[in-house]
Amino acid sequence: MIFEKILEEINDVVPIFKEEKEYLKSILKFKKLNKKDFLLHQKQVEDNYYYVLSGCLRSYINDKKGLEHVLQFTSKGWWIADNESILYNQPSKFNIVADLDTEILILSKKAKEESVKKFPKLELYYNESLIRSVIFLRNRLYEILSLSAEERYRNFCIMFPELKNSISQKHIASYIGITPEFFSAMKKKLKNRQICFEEC
Image 1 (cartoon, one colour):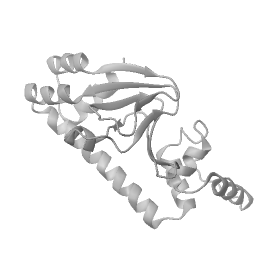
Image 2 (image 1 turned 180 degrees about the vertical axis):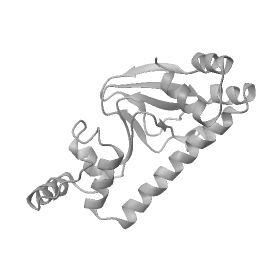
Image 3 (image 1 turned 30 degrees about the horizontal axis):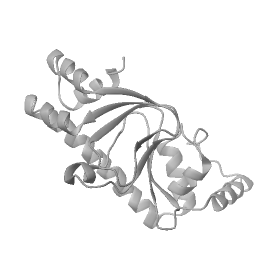
Image 4 (image 1 turned 120 degrees about the horizontal axis):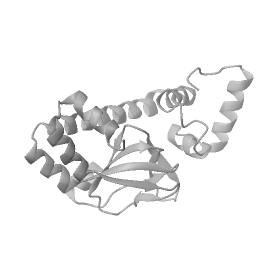
């Protein structure tokens, strides 16, 4: 059951059979994280890719003033990694931490490279996962540059409906790009104006 979701996802991109499935099960490592457990610290060199089975991971940076800025949340069915750190073997610019009790699968850089050598068709799946992440981050940049705080909050609710009431409100505020105080006031205004996003 642990591998069912990801094997189905891979099979939707490229057909895999018993040999490939058993091989993938052998290289993907299962791990349980408690809330607040770290997977990656800023300035640490990364060597793994993480696939979320349940729960939520948060990636963030600390600026020179020590303020935290949330880059993304990663929930069920998504991969997260610092591709720059993995590719260039350089210190990561951000942290990855569990915002909830979380279950993940870990794929090492070496295992990924060896899997493509053994089964070249798996590269199609890896590439699609990377493209999916790039599209998400591009849309994230568009939101930050072009949308209002209310619109960014609505999009958060659409993207992560299960997280609205289960993770820290200050982390949601940081993701949206506003202070916790502004976020609280904004939600009160929305309530007073009787605006309720269906997705929320």
